[in-house]
Image 1 (spheres, protein in one colour):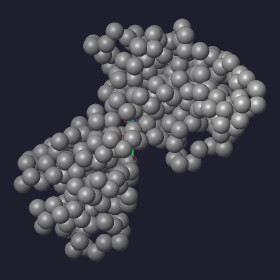
Image 2 (cartoon, helix red, strand yellow):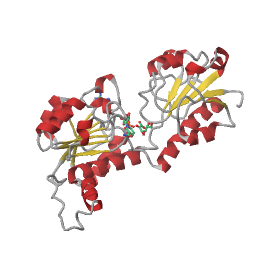
Image 3 (cartoon, rainbow, N blue to C red):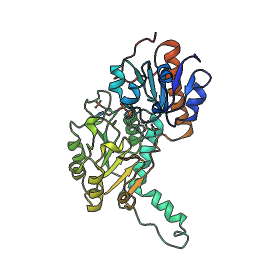
Length: 317
Ligand code: NAP
Ligand code: 8YV
């Protein structure tokens, strides 16, 4: 397959490169820098992050875009589908890691454990000071999951072990779970103490968690976001934290990464992570392998391993 060219624009996990080089001719460059003959030779793309319509349009013989990550919002899937190009993502292999991180973020936020560690490291405990009791506890709390897909379900299973009552809001109720279904995000926010966001970035989820939802969550309420920053109105969140409209927030994702609004850094009732929910060596290796396997399968057996539902899955010719 060394006669097949695969484009790798921008940075990607090194294991993707290791798995593909030798098998394919790798073109490690941005589309805008390539001549027409090279562009015409490219049949596959391996990408982490953005691959917009203009890049797709520049590649007349493209067959597959293998995207790193389960969320593939950076790839213009409608343009790919219109061109009969398959898009693949990396579902399932990261479910447990992301769910573990989500639960850690819940506990860190509610019990202020990162602040307690910073207190110790600063020598304050050793000097005889006591770390303040956390204003909130997980005891007796109700959690509402906004999204109950592959990752949401793993989060729910872990939260059950913490003895929390669980509800969820999705567009379609699930028949296979014992959790309470809410037909609207607003209704769920009004009923729970912890609102945990794990939905994809779509037009419908844009700033879905706004001032109204935060108001419904209430003064004992905590927002946790491990989905996409896109789903939260950050200005409304900052205002809600400032005014005590909600009690706290734990965030792994932000609207304009890696930019984190300065105001969020100043809140003691907030726990912040730099988009690390899947960021362990084993899990990122598994994601990288799945990117490579999608491309290898496509060009060897004519089927991508984990194609996204929006794009066609024709047998390659
Ligand atoms: P998934 O299996 O596709 O689940 C998505 C869930 O969201 C489903 O329950 C879906 O249910 C629900 N949903 C979608 N649109 C909705 C809407 N408009 N209103 C209400 N519910 C909606 O996806 P996943 O594998 O669990 O991943 C979820 C997302 O997490 C990814 O797309 C990614 O953005 C994010 N993520 C973040 C990290 C991180 O590092 N922080 C890591 C991995 C994933 P219905 O279809 O019934 O509505
Ligand atoms: C990754 C993610 O951090 O899978 C996703 O959707 O957000 C994360 O696992 C990201 O894709 C790597 O760039």
